[in-house]
Amino acid sequence: VGLSPAGGPAGGGTTVTLTGAGFADFGAGQLCCSFAGAHCSSAATLLAVDEADPTTTRLSCVLPSGAAGSSTAVEITLNGAVPSAPLSSSGLQFAHYAAPTVTSFTPDSGDASGGFVITLTGSGFDGLMLLLGGGATEHVRLKIGESIGTVAPSFLSATVAIFTAPDGAAGAPSIVAIALNGQDFEAASDGGGGVPTFSFTGYHPPKLTSAAFSNDLGTLVLSFDAQPTDRASMAGVASCARLLSADSVAALVGASNINDTKVSTRPTC
Image (tube, rainbow, N blue to C red; front, top):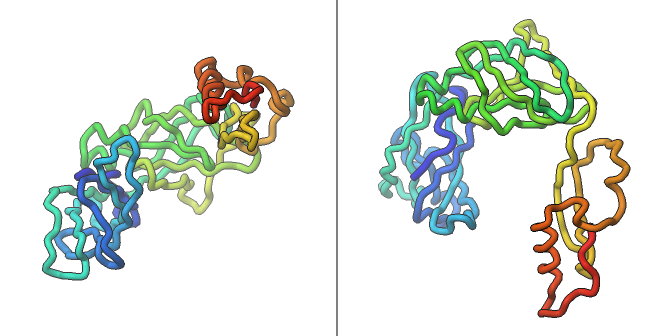
């Protein structure tokens, strides 16, 4: 059995995913997570099977609060309605850390394409690392507005975190936040009730949000994120080779075979 994330803020509310074998939901109130030996502490939700690993089953549940620096044993039961039903015996522990605080960051603006260095100062940035070891830094993430970075900080101490900024969208000022476990973000605050903000300028590279064939299978319709753009050449219909790699175009040509009958036109985008 695996547990992700392995820790969260002491205030509770972290949604964790457990992976293992034999998880099943036999009805309301049956599939539960057990915390610190309590039989059915939190209702669990059975998650869809990962197609890449169909033999593994997954579920999610929400962790309660716990004292900072402590850990809570996490197990499951498939029969939450019966107090004497057995629990799993995975030995998993969830670590509770004091929520970090971000008091300032520099710079306070940057290009919407991201890639620049941004430095956060505050306290408690090493909270999860102190409990789980240095490898826990791999889960620390930066969030600016709605954009979440995909890489760990290049430097992390109790009071300083240095990140490569993700791309973002110009417009309204963005809140800056940090998550030690990759999902529970704590927003910046100047300590006096104010919230410092970050401003993106310019445009980020278009992000593909969906791809689907037209009804006649002759056109691949690509949808991008809704940021304003000065790239007028993005509009219209053209050969897929202008947007996609040669391998992708070859796959699309193959996909346009229906019942071994070749569509008369090569796919366009």
